[in-house]
Image (tube, rainbow, N blue to C red; front, side, top):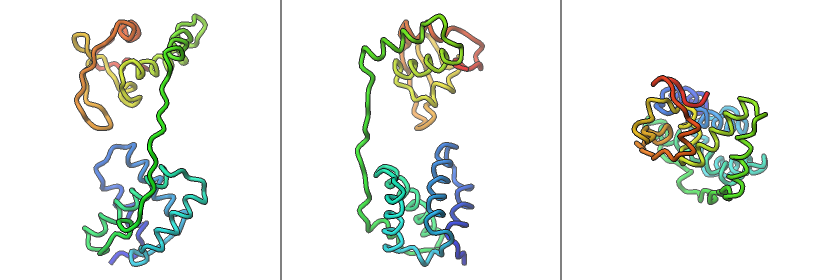
Length: 195
C-alpha cells in the first residue's frame, strides 16, 4: 500500500484531466502542503493535521480565499484516495471551511474613458497598446483574459464573437460593438486577434 500521500498526490495530478491553469493551481496547493509537513502517510491525515495545516496557512499570511482553495484541493485528493481505497474518511468534511465573498471592483465610466484615451495616444508603444487593447476588449465584451488572448479571427462571425470559453467551455455569442470592431481589424482565420 502507498505510504506517502504527497508522492502519490503529485503522481495522481499527472493523471487528472484538467486544464493547464487548474493543474498549476493544484500543484501550487500541493507544494504548500509539502512545505507544511513534508512527507506524511495517508493514515496521518486527520482533523488535527487539517487544523494545523489551516493554522500554517494563516501564519504564512494567506487570505481566507487562498486557505479555502488550498483545503478544497487537499480535499479533492483525499476524495480520490478514498475512491482508490487508500483512506476511509475525509476529515476536511468535518471542518468549517473558510470562505470569503469575492471583492470585485469595477472601472467607473470615467476610468474606462481615460483608459481608452491612454490607448489612443500616438506615442504609446505597440506592446503597451496591445495589452491595453486586450484589457479594454475584456471590459467591453465581458470575456476573460484567457479567452481574449486565445481569440482568433475564425471566432468572429457576422458581427459576433462566437467561441467556447476556456475556463467553463461554455458556448458564447457576443455582439461586437463599433469601438471593439475598430480595434480587432481583420486577419487570417487561424491568426490570433491579439499578439
